[in-house]
Amino acid sequence: LPISSRLWIFLFRKTAKYIFCERRYKMLTLLNRRLGFCIRYNFVRNYVLPASTDNTVDPKVMYELKKHLRNQRLLFKDGPTCLLMECHFCNNISGGEAFVNKRTGLFLCPNCDLKKNVVDIIHLYEKNCRGDAKCRDVEYKSKFTDLQSVSQSVCDKLGIRGLQSADLEHLGAQYEPNSNCLRFPLKNVANKVVGEKILHLSDRRDETIGNYNQSGLLLSNAPQKSLRVVLVSNLMDFIVLSIQRLSNTSVACLPYGLKSLPQECLPCLEKFKEIVFWFNFETTDWDVAKNFAKKLEENRCFFIRPTGTEPAPFEAYKKRFNLQHILNKATPMCHKSITTFSALKNDILSELQNIEKVNGVKWKRYPILNKILKGHRKGELTILTGPTGSGKTTFMSEYSLDLALQGVSTLWGSFEIRNCRLAATLLRQYVGYSLEDKLNEFEYWTSQFERYPLYFMTFHGQQPLKLVMEAIEHAQYIHDISHVIIDNLQFMMGMSIAQKSDKFWEQDSIISAFRSFATKNNVHVTLVMHPRKERADEDLTTSSVFGTAKATQEADNVLIIQDKRLTSLRGKKYLQIVKNRYSGDLGIMPLEFDKESLSYSTSNKKKKTSSS
Image (cartoon, rainbow, N blue to C red; front, side, top):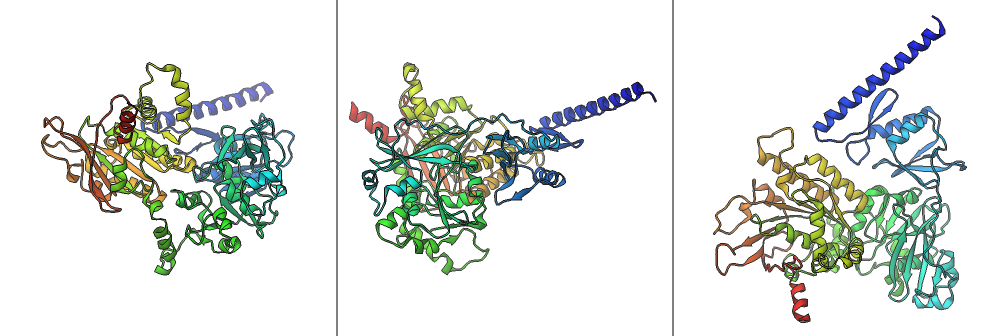
C-alpha cells in the first residue's frame, strides 16, 4: 500500500482504540456512580487500573508499580511502611529518593516536594516522564528574626543536670531572647528544614510551627549505623536522652506530641529496625503507642511500660535512674496469641499505678458524668438514645466539644444535620453566646476554634456501610482519631444490596462492624440511635432502643435522654446512664438547657451566676 493509505489505516486504528477506551470508561463510571461509589480509572498498558475505591491503596496497584520497576531495571527497596525508589521528576538532582506509602499509596519526594497518587505515578513512569515536577524550595523560614546561640545561662534555666551549651547547639538549638524560648528545627528525610519546635523556658511548654501539609522529626545526630530509635513526645525528654550518648541509639521527638503522627514522618524512621516508644505516663494518652505502632509495623516496635519505676526520661533523670537500664527493658508491642499471667503482671501493675489515667479523659463540663462513668476511654462503644426532639445532637456536640478541647481527636459523622449547621452549633457552644450581633469577633473565635482536632465526614443522608467505614479507617490512620460519632445510625441503613427487607439484620451488621473497629483500633465510637415508639408517659429503657438486643449487648455504655416536660407539669429532662460496663455505676444527670449558649453544662451556669 502507498504511504498515505498506511497512514490513514494507522490513524483509524488509533482513533477506534481511543473511542473504545472512552466508551468503556464512561460505562464503568456510570455503573459505579449508580452503585454509590466514586472510582477513578487510569489507562495503563491498554487496560483499566482501579485507583482504589477507598483511601487504602489496592495491593494490585503496588504490585503493578513493582512490576514496572523490575521491567525497567530500576532499583527499589521494600521497607516496613514505604517503598523506596528513585524520583524521576527531580530537576537538577541526581539520585533523588522518593517514598511510596504502602497503605495510602502516597508518592512523596522530599527533595522536590512532589506528592501524587501512586496510580498517577505508574502512568507517568510508563510514559518515561522525567524532570516534569515544578520543584520549589521547601526549606522552612523561621518566624523568629533575632535567633542567637545558646549560652550556658540559658541551659541552666532548663534544670537538667550536666547540660552544656554545646549539647544544645549539637541538636541545632537557637535562643530567641524576645520570646524567651529555644528553637529546634524539624527536618524531613532529605535533611531539609520543614518546621520548628519551640520550647518556652518559662513553663517548659512545647509548640510546633510548620508549613501546611509538611512535617518532619527532630532527630539527634546519632551514628549512621544506629539501628534503634527512641521516640519521645516532648523536648525535655528529647534533650535528656540526647545527652546520654546511648550506644547505637538515636532519639527522635514527635512533631505534635501524642496528638498525631503524620505519614510524612514515616520515611524518617524507615532505616531503623527497632522503634522504642518512651512516653510520659502523666498524660491520659499513655497508651497511644499502640496506635502509632500500627503505622510503623508492630513487629519492630517496643515500648516502656508506664510504671513508677520506669517513668518518662526527664522524670527518671531527675530521680537519678539508670536510663540505659530502663531502655533495655523495653517490651515488644506484639504478643503471641496465647499469653500467661506472668506476662500480664506488669500491665496490671501499670494500670493499678495509673488508675486515674486508665479511667480516661475527664469531662470539664459534666462533673456528674465523671462520678458515674469515671471518664472517656478508648476502645469502647457508647449508645445515646432519646425521644425525637429531646436534644440528642445538641448534647452530643457539647459532649464531644468538651473532649476535643482536651486534645481528643474527634471525627463527626453527621448524617442527619449538615456539617455547616453542626459546626455553627459547636462554635456557639465554644464561645458561649451567639455571634450574630458580634460579627467583628468572628475571625478571632474561629481562629481559636480551628486549632482543636475536630474533623467532619462529608456524608449526608443514607450511605452504605462500606463507604463510611473506609472513610473512618482512613481518618484514623491519617489524623489518629480517638473518638468517632455517628449521628445517627438509622440514616446509614437501607443501602445494602443483600437483605434489603431485613432491617434488624442490617442494623446488627452495622453495630458489629463498629464494635470490631473500636476494639481493633482502640477508638471510642459513639452511636446516636432513635428509640422505638413508646408511650409518652413511660420511661425509656435499654429495650427501647430500636432493633434487636444486640445494640445494647455490644455497647459498653448506654445513655438515655428522658424528657418528662410534656407529660408532667413538674417534669424534668435528664440523662440516665443505664449501662456502664467499666465500673458498673448507674445514675442520672439533670439537663438544664441554656438557649443562649446551646449548652447543658452546669459549669457554664455557675460562671454566669457568679459574674452576675
